Length: 107
Length: 151
Image (cartoon, each protein chain N blue to C red):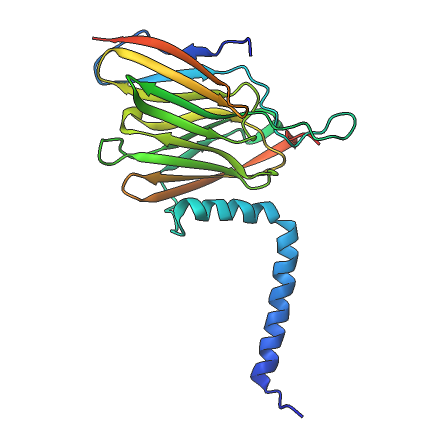
């Protein structure tokens, strides 16, 4: 997976502010229900788990099923009380874990 | 000769009728049943309250391959009382599960958006669980022009 995940969140926030976070992970999200030209089922390959942590504490987690569209997009919120780092992880069916980090300054 | 009372006859009749109904509905709504099973598993058999949930979905989805979905639970998000889990199921998809969102008090608000696949016109059911063990539910019908689960 050469493509990097895309993140959108503010660089700065006020203490206690609830910020919006948007993420997009380029991925085929093969459902395991489609068939190829020869009628063989294309094996399932999806991102089955997405997590977001802030300074090591869980903020938001999503368990994903094949009903999530390709290039899984997630929008959610986080309440920030201190400066720190958001860590995002995407787990593939084959065990591959992609991570991304973004810092935020809280004044 | 065995005596068949009027009551027994009625019971046989009712049993037959029930079989007919369940046999038929079992085939026609297999996925709706799977969806109901999944919800029952999530709530542990409790009946969720039909409130506090709002679901944003297009009324008509022309392409079932990517349908924008936003869910929001109108509940406090404090350290001792917050929305902990939200289950999303699609009744008429081959596999009714769509996603389970886990929130924490650090989420600030119990809102999330993503893009989903829908096989056919159907109800999307959302069930939320709070850290205190309360359940809320809501549902919304989406008309799907072209299904998005391949064939």
